[in-house]
Amino acid sequence: MTNKGLSASDLTISRAEHVLLEGAELELAPSTITYLYGENGAGKTSLMRCLSGLLQADSGKIHWNGQLITSLDSDYFQDLIFLAHALSMKAELTIFENLSFYARLRGVKDPKPLIDKATTELGIGQLQNRRFAELSAGQQHKVALCRLVIEPAKIWILDEPFVNLDKGTRHWLAELIQQFARQGGTVLFTSHHEIEELAIDQRIGIEH
Image 1: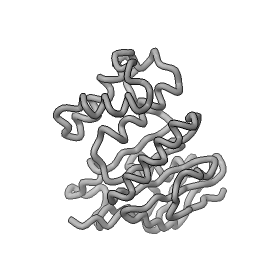
Image 2: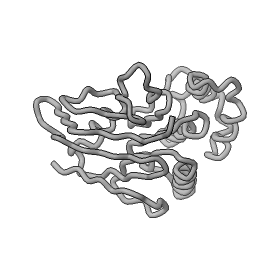
Image 3: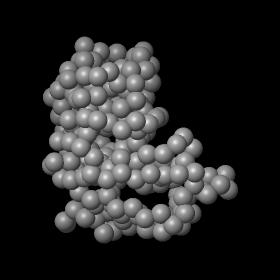
């Protein structure tokens, strides 16, 4: 199937009876990087959760490659990686055990080489056997970023992926995102500041 990207039409999202978005239209094409910006509370995270299937919209439709993401024929959730503020890791498991779990869910039979590569590039290779709960906040964030290396996907939805990263890791992530887009991937990310290292194709602003 030809990759047509992600689209949303007539999308309305509310929270606690407060309308965050009304009648929104969105087009995220393959091989593009989209920067989603807006003030805190404007609805950026709610929009991302809705696009990721974690939040039900009040109305509207979301399509991936021309099919509703809720269709039984859609491969959307197998094609998607959503990285949120909540890192979705098991505190009692090690780095290796957490990343192996996600990789095997995607059909990666031998995730060790990919985990070795990602953790080494991010400077946490020596911590693979450390429990997630024992890591610093910065190290935990790096573990979550490893998912972008070890899991096959076609679309990344990333909520504040650059927050609290050192300069070297920022450059690493920016290059990874651009490489993913060059290979046909679709990227949507939020940031409180525009990322100079990224060649952004589309900017979408959300206002209160």
